[in-house]
Image (cartoon, rainbow, N blue to C red; front, side, top):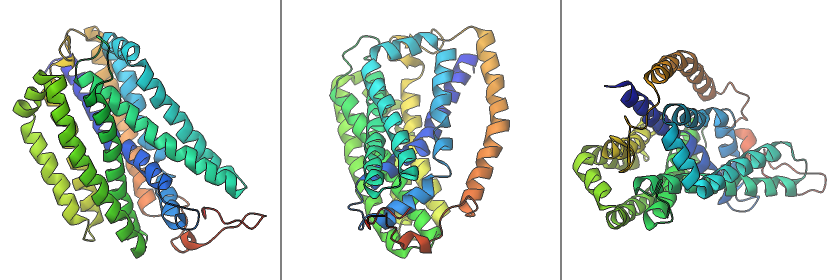
Length: 346
């Protein structure tokens, strides 16, 4: 394996980790947005807040890592993507800013109405970011970079599919969290949403494949001829996660659902290799000089040594309930502001 291919594989790994963690954070924001009014949505919103507060910024480190890696190792591809897809990526950035601002405001706002508005901003940002990031991926897959014309049915469907994937993974994780915190009413609540998002994601996946066949037949053929084993693994894992959602083995449920998403990402990567930009720029042609690639791989190993143990410790402490999360009992309390208006109970 060449150094360029190894760095490309690291990029796929970063995309996979972001799909299994960062997208779940965005999905939680969508469930927050759709939870209903202040009273009806209080308990699910409190569980969402409890689940993502300790880890949400850590989950998005992979997106930053991916951008830096692409910029450094494959500068020509990075420039083409940023130039051609400036509009969708700018909207994705807007979503990131709105999401962060809404989340921060919801923590510090003293008045219920401001907190409720902050929740809306958080939810809207959580939809915008995965949709536009997915649209950008769809544009790359259909070979619209750097030729332009990125608004295609495939790109838009991949954008909606990315939202559905985030919502599905998030619902599964929150279902597991409801088990862990002993909140049986929210187990059924998030199980239903996992089924809905998973079913919608399956339909969108089929629709995106059909659209890809019309937009970029060569990529469609490569996906079926080279990525079919991983597509089957993805379907089997996601189906198994549906069955496990009825049980109590929450760790197995999380791992199986994450494996289904990971297999889907790898199927795309296998189908697209050796192209960075189908079908105009290969990995080897777009790579930086060998010395740069070797140093990137050295720093990747260093990052594994430094970052992975820290993340494992973070998630371990989070699951042990030692990161100042609220107790399960407090999730049902109604908090009132000076005007006596109940807010989200955070």
